[in-house]
Image 1: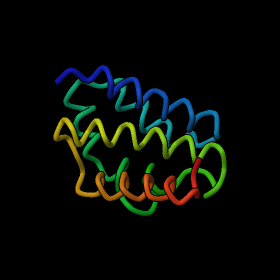
Image 2: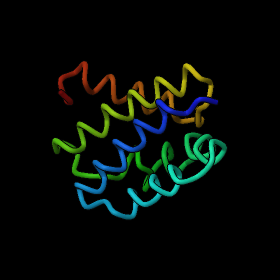
Image 3: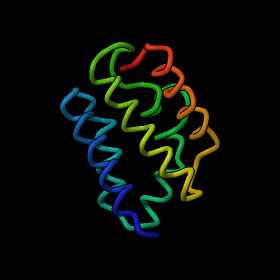
Image 4: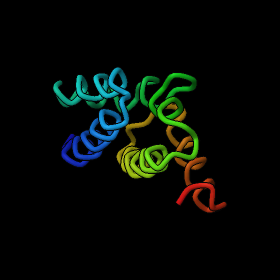
Length: 109
């Protein structure tokens, strides 16, 4: 698996989380980035990234903050890439569809 695009988006997510003082979640992403291609693939499929409460898709920032909106945009990019590559968590598609719907409804810009 050529994971360059995945690494790039994950690094952007980690930086955003660090800037937003979500250090424990940023550390999870940085840990995955420091690992092998298998480590990254496992993380892309993880509940830490795409799960429910407490996951990176669900937890960081307040609902309407600029940082939250940016995170959702990054997760849409990442999720679309994952779907295209067939490397998904059971919730990846649902999260991507939700974030895209929020953008369409004007809840996210």
